[in-house]
Image (cartoon, rainbow, N blue to C red):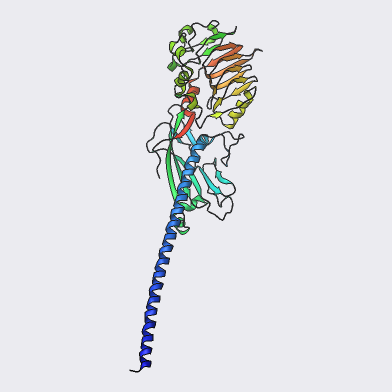
Length: 426
């Protein structure tokens, strides 16, 4: 065999080896690229799933905040011109049983929000019984615009005062895209549903049995005070005080159960009330210390100048039903607050001075002395109860009517919704 032929054969063998090596390297590169594509897809799926989970959790927290919020408009923003709150719009709460249920005729989806890069969460809280998904996102964006929808349903174990929040997070700006399996798969969307129970913490844990409860001394003017209670469940009691005697009580202005002498409905020199500290007396009715009570999500602090009347009226119009005033509370203009179906609870962190006619449906609690005096023949009316952790002085014409329906509204329908521990489920 010639040397030329041997060289040719060696060159061919080398070429074959090189081609095989190139083929092996190409297969390795393709396999590595395939793994990289899968890893990228897995990472993208994890990312979208994480965004959907966080969005759903944000929806649950948002709903909890809205349940403790003020009057809202169709875009879920606070609006004093609107007359109902989120809870009023979407929930029925029984004043007798505390049972919570969705409003009759409410849409299956009660609210929805879309994340906008420029506006934050853009939400809709329709009042109609039918909910229509938005046709487009609130604003165009280069990045993902997740959304969530919210439903309020009965919990698995139906307990009085409990409601279940269902929040569905979607990585699309149109939440309806995540509802359809085919559409969700084609668009590579992620969807997560979070469920959590919320419980209503009563604004008035232990209702008073009398229209008037005074820890200190009571002094009355020539008109005395009108006390009225015809509720048989409270035995028609009119007054509870640690004072030994109250001169100036007029029989003609005391109304209790028919056939019961008014004097039998008056409790004087109550040792438990007299020995109670300020915190203990507060706990008797509200079930917790003042420092904890004021931090409830439903409670609103109202700041006012010399006259708190206008500030309280404005607060009530905005949806405030539990108001806390630090320091003294003074009302020097005619003021009307609360209704029979939506009473107002007012807690004053100091003395109270009422120098003008006041018509309050609800409950007033004073952590200091109360001076309620106004002239001119005008009348003040409190439908509910007055609790005084101090002395009480009344001048003018003041009537306090113990109304069980108002007390039940405060006990069973008014209060803060809080998350039930251990109820979270994904």
